Length: 551
Image (cartoon, rainbow, N blue to C red):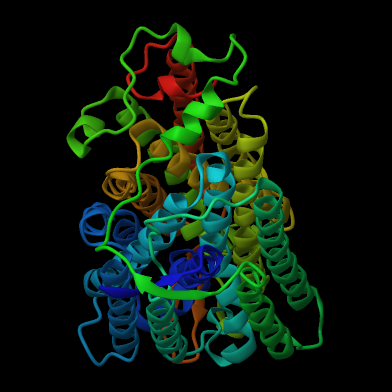
């Protein structure tokens, strides 16, 4: 049959753009306070909605299996439509047109999260298979960084075009939710048509490929820098220039479409077979492996049989799979605990004199800090993904990805302690480290999974790993942090009256989150220990799957 073949760099560019609309799960803290005020949710109930949102986004095993079977087009179409439906239901709930209990809203958020996860699966899996193993860390880093940038992008769009629905002043959040439904669903649908696994790849010279990868890095860093600068400007400037800054950001984001310029025809028409999975890049890996120094080439000393592809069942029944799962559970769960509760953590650090007061939402001290911190988290979440992707490739002969995973877990644990004792002003530095640590997980783990278990069932295998952040979010963010904050709010709280007359209770005092952060810090230490054990098993050649890669 005659079929259009898409330029590999156009696939990459639209995949990165797809990620910029798929990552709105990290945007939840930006509108959670407004939604909570409109629908009278408690802190724990609001946290549970965030947990269900994360559960939907990371429980992508069904999407992964579907992708492995039917390819990117059908998977992306379902993801885009599902995202639209989820946000549209949340929009109706915010207007109280449909059932709007926290359970119902959490279900709508779960639907939206599922769509987000399916689009993530399409963008990541497709480009990973279209590029050689030598650049896998960088490619994963670029795609993952755009997923992380998404919340920063939409935070600035929220501030620029929907200031009246800003959560800090108690406005109506429904118009912004409708905007999210249309943009994420519509753009996701458009980008899907350019996602294609190439059954025949043209060999690209390394210098030319390296230049384009460097250009993609430059654009991603430019977007991150722009978001950081505009967020800081909005927080500390009395002049409102949010709208022109938002327009400039849109132009900058779409400059990613310049990536394929000069790389040949964007579309080719010709005969092409049905959807066929590319073989794993083991040829590239084999070519690279024999070049490793003897002290690093663990394949030569391992007694375990060499295997380049694992079935889903073989992957799930391996020890390495569950060790990676637990590292994600502790590390990412700790990060989500802070991200989803960030507005409440900011308010909890207000002076004790604020306890017992009843104030209007427009008079809440440090009201702009929450949105600014969410945007900065997005920026440095991006930097963490880019940095870990670049460094794990550049130092592959000296430090394995597992070594970087140990460092990411330790940094995440240090961040939990930092948040336990810092002031509101100090949170700016804490969020920088939080973003870097958090982002590193979502670059390192996809690359680890692809290398450990092969590409044959990568979508399903990584989809199962996505359950770990969702479980960590529920345990740390809701069951521990949300309930403790509600409990301490009975002793000291600030009552905020929204524009619609609703009352929102906020916990005041460092105790509100101190003990939950202590729990997450301990979890990160356990995660670091597990990653270190994996690195030790890998070096000794006793790991069943990770034995192929340098440590």
